[in-house]
Length: 182
Image (cartoon, rainbow, N blue to C red; front, top):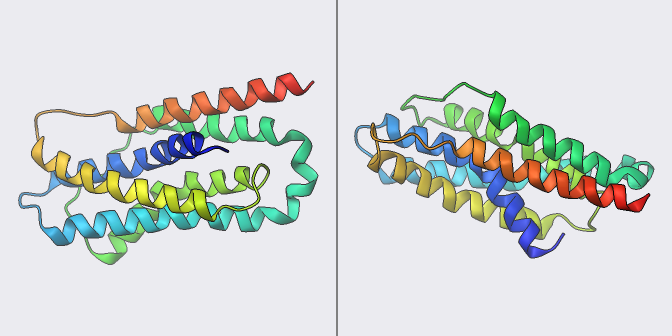
């Protein structure tokens, strides 16, 4: 994975967090700095931790899957990307307590776990990509909640669909690499 691919993956993964942050911004009457920081920190930290967890847990099976790494990567990325089109539920509440933020952070970062599993087949260390993913998610989440609050009741941005398209395109790229191996 080169830096450009890491950034694309990070932006794609952050799109769920951005979409939820945007909806959180829509849902509050008065945006507080504590809301902004909670959204950025929770989403950024979990988005960065999940690929590390997926990477570490997959190391034991990675040696058996090396031959099919691009095919597996295609399947994982394409399915995650497709879920951005199929998931119709919207999170619309103004709760910023620890439990609510924890549930939102985990649910928006489950796809990052899959990226960690896939990455274990292609790279030696996940720490640099995970840091980039965490940083980009942190920034985009903050932008999302602020933008949502500013644009409240005026516009609906399909951020999850944009992220889904990017993940699907990266998956297709991996499928093309897999096909060229044979």
